[in-house]
Image (cartoon, rainbow, N blue to C red; front, side):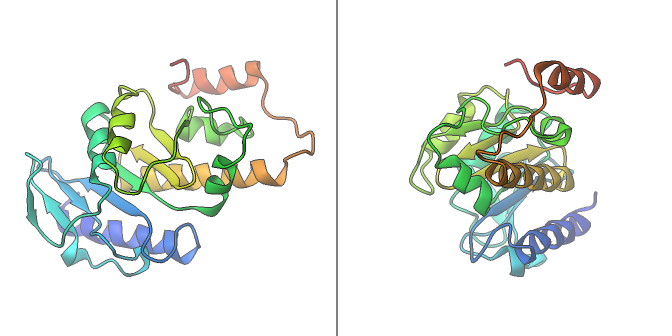
Length: 215
């Protein structure tokens, strides 16, 4: 995708996420690979609802900031995914309400944060790793992602928000929306004795769609 079109797509998708309440205020950040191996990144302190294509932070293929406004303080999160997952073409981080709420509950599985309620949650996300609480902007978040050695496309920062890498910016946005939708379902069904997918059904999805699941 040509850079001008990519800039427009980033801003369009970010605005859609904002307008539907998936992030708020100046929370969240988004980045995408350019054709030359560089990055376009949402600037620090900006709202997803009002991103300017011409002011996105621009990095060259060496990771040097070469244009646009100052980037998000969560750059260590983004670079950790790009450096450890060769398939990562975009990274999205939101402060989405239901996933944050679920992360605060004491009985969630930190190795498999989302319950297997639907096939699409498995297909688009694989297993989501729940990471501990960090101070916003702490480079240790990136270190924690690097510690996963590229085996997860999505993590949940406890009391903070999800981070998802995808092959491109549209795929990353679709996946993080699926994460929030699954978290919402989990909260709605809590205590209701809902029937999640069983091990055989999960394996059928994993096999058919070649999902990273056994790490």
